[in-house]
Length: 417
Image (tube, rainbow, N blue to C red; front, side):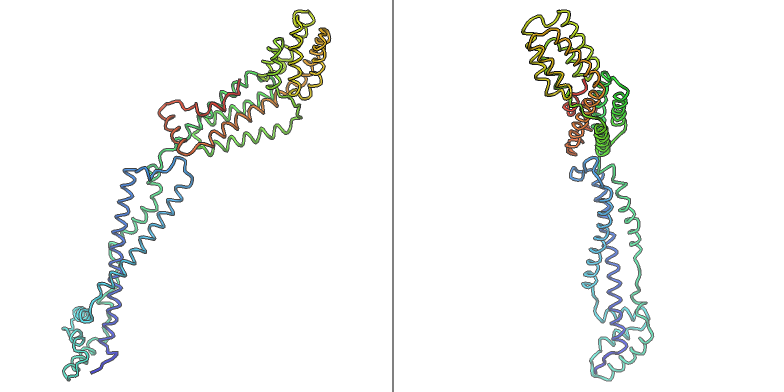
């Protein structure tokens, strides 16, 4: 007997599909929940024990967004792997036709008619044909959905809090996988150094314009010292200050006078030592007054009493000329007078030099102040910017323990005096 496409065979085929689907959902759900629990337990363990490999450098940028992305990708991967395991498991657990027919009989109370028909398929006997016909009649109108209904396992609802846990992971893990950002300790040290530097400049400030510039530096120093700034924010503040100083420098008409270098050369003559010291401190007006006093001393024959003194003065002004910008012509005249041992002319030329220096005083001081400030800020910016995250973290930890961490920045802080 050949009974193709009988009702029994159709029902059993449908049961097979629905049975596979039911097994797939059940196994996928169980696997998914098991993997989710295992993953959550692993993450919790890592957060508790904080292995070094998990630690992020303090101040790491975008760590929370990366963790969000990781959470979503991990959740998706768990779902895909669970589905693959569920599909393979459902295939391996596949039941025989007889077992599927027996399940159908049990659900609808058919007293094994459908399973018997499946056993007698192909038998060429009247009894077998009668059993199969009877089974077809009984199976007609019966829905295999009732045998293997599609149900979402209750355990799958655990995926909801699991997903919420993964979404909240960046917040839960923030203080565990990323130590407290102590980099502000290093930026605070930068602020202290900048404050010391500004106070050093303030001692020699001669005009309101200079005092205003120094006040801006002091405000930046206080902000860096007292606000808990990340390195990125501190560098942005310093860069902005440098930019403002550059803009200010462009508004000045250059005098070409390098106070520090000129002072070094003028100090070769002992009669110019005090004036040179004042110039080095950017106290240009005070230096001009001192040069006038030197001229008076030369007139009164208290200074330049020997030829060697004239020669030292000549050498000092000759070497200083390259750093005196618009005053170099007057310096040349001083050199000529001293090289001729002409006391009166030397005194006159020094007086003129003092007047011209006094006239240029404010702008020269501003140029020097801007140059020193930009140099200091650039050094601190470089010191802070070149530190690795690990160095920054170590400095922060030292600062947190009360240890001194200022040594790292000392190279950039020697211009204040």
